[in-house]
Image (tube, rainbow, N blue to C red; front, top):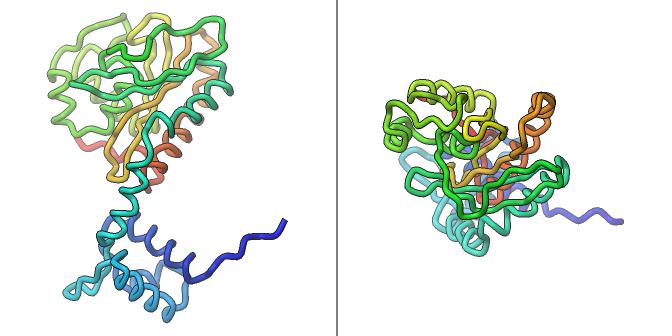
Length: 264
C-alpha cells in the first residue's frame, strides 16, 4: 500500500498552529525558529499566509503571533457537530470489554454528579447505579475526579467546607481530608473511590476536559471490591487515564496531563 503524499508546507502550517495553541500564549518568530526544526524562510512565509487567512494574528508591539478568529471558528464548527455521548461511548465500551467491569460517565449538576452513560460489564458481580441517578461528589471516584480540576473556592462551595456526609466508614470525614485526597488525585493522575460511597464498590476515575481545559465530565471503572482489586488498580488507572485524555483531545484539549499541580 502506497504511503500518502504529505505536502510539507501544509504539514508545517498545522504543526505551527498546534504549537501556538498548546503554548496558550503569543509566540515570536525567534521562538518558533528555536523550537521547530523548519527552515527559517519557510516559517516566515507560512506565518504570513496564516495571518492573511486569519488563522493567526500578529501583534506589532510584541512582534508575536497568536490564534485568530478563523482558528476558533473551525474548532467551534467541529465541536458543534459532536456530542460527548457519541464521542465517549466507544471508549467506554472498549474499557468494559477489556476489564469485564462496568464503566460510567457522569457530569456535575448543582454540586452533585449525574450519571450520563453506563456500559455494563460481564462480571457476575456488578454495580447498581443507573443513568440519571444523582450522587455526592466527595465520596465517588467520578465526583472527586471533577473536584480535583476545580479551584478551592468552588470545592468549598460544593462541599460546604466543613464536615462531610458519611456514606460508609471509609468516607472522607472533612473538607481538609478531601483536599488532601484531591492533592493525591492530581499527583497520581486519577481519583479513587475506596468503598467510600458503597461498602462493596471500588472505582478509579478521570475527568474529561475541553479545549479551554475546563472539566466537562468524568469517566470511571467501577467494580465490586475484593482483595484482588488492588492488583488491578494499576491496569485500570492506565486504561481510564488514556481514554480520558483521548476523549479530551477530541474536544480540543491539547495538554498532555489531565491535572495541573494542586494550588492550595
